[in-house]
Amino acid sequence: MAERETLKDVQLRLLARLQAASAENVAVASWLAVECADLRLLLPLTQAGEIFSWSGTQPVPHARPWFLGVANLRGVLAGVIDLAMLLGAPVQARSEQALSECALVTMGAALEVNAALLIDRFAGLRGAQDFVATQPPAPDALPCMRAVQINARDEHWQILDLQTLAQDAAFLNIGA
Image (cartoon, rainbow, N blue to C red):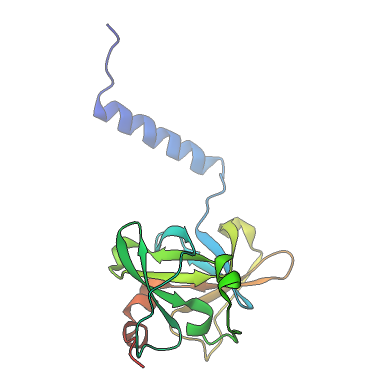
């Protein structure tokens, strides 16, 4: 009969593998890179939730223009926010055809907000190794906007702190 590995053995083996990965400078993703209108945003993986295809929303009367309505995402009702519009980017009216090409990113469960952010396009995962410079946010930036990461092609990617956004009174007040 084969020997069973104890929990302590598994933990020690996992710790050794993590230390080896750290020593080898293994690339680690920290952000989900998304595009909304003309914005390039980095959503912290620790704060982002699941990704869903656009499936439509049930409108909510007397809501702010950036609150698109409520969607049933795998049995959970979530408020759907047009992220570009919320952040003040110029957004043209979207047809159902244009919306069908968009996606939703839910906010992580730890943030305790049933909300999904409408994004235009995913650009993949990014880590610190993908950037060559960092700039502070603009002085007039929203509190949820963090540092700007700049890659080798001189593209600017703004970090969006979802936890700060989830605690913002204006974000939580959807009434027009």
